[in-house]
Image (cartoon, rainbow, N blue to C red; front, side, top):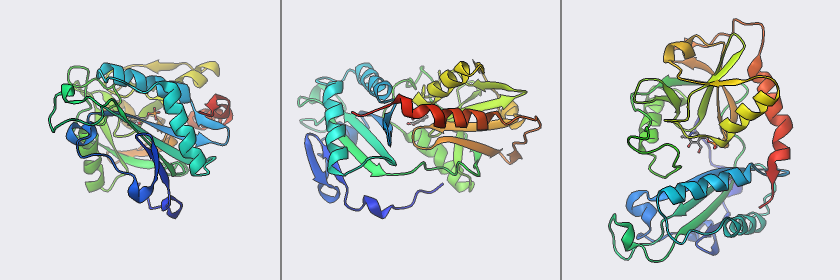
Length: 299
Ligand SMILES: Cc1ncc(COP(=O)(O)O)c(C=O)c1O
């Protein structure tokens, strides 16, 4: 799905390194690590009426990613929450908002890869936009499997939520060229990892499964789905899944903060046909809608 420009976002205020600036003045230095080497970590957050969904889990993952990359002088979670709160207040935002939170290694004294060139501490960008879920969650999406593999821990651990997104972008380009909505990425062994921007689940004969989080992002929505399904008596099997299994699944769906739960109705030209008498994704989706507000909090 190609997102369209939302005119409500024309006059946004954006938090950049301690200042809240109008959209056209919100800029970072050309010496910033994210420009020099994609050397940054990020989170996507969604604001509902009752607050930001699973906020502490997102901020914990951000801190863990920063620690793995050995960022120095990282802002505390409280400081990051303050920046988010100030940004939302300045924009009068209360719901239907997606926040792109970027923590960079900060500005360098000169261009170069070496983190020792950074002596100014981390940079923080809070970009909050009006953005309802981005996929067509009513009608579902069509996907292709991509030739681009998702990184395994041998290359760049998918548990670091970093800004080196070129693998995923190359996969998305393949989907665009094929005229489909998203790209399915496999791991280095050929098993399903995730889509270029969301996690994936399948249901077959009433059993829910999802790939191990070895070559996929351990998504916060993914974990939440596993949790609420389990509490409802539907254990999710975390296992290796092959493409053939997906083609023949009764239901396939993807999950993420940006798009929530989205049905996948075609993979590599094969329609996903539900031959069972149940619609389990519908049950999980209702559970998600019912439970999510209890997991929202204000920063
Ligand atoms: C590659 C990838 N997979 C999955 C997700 C979904 O993760 P979450 O549920 O934490 O939003 C994201 C979101 O940033 C992502 O970039």
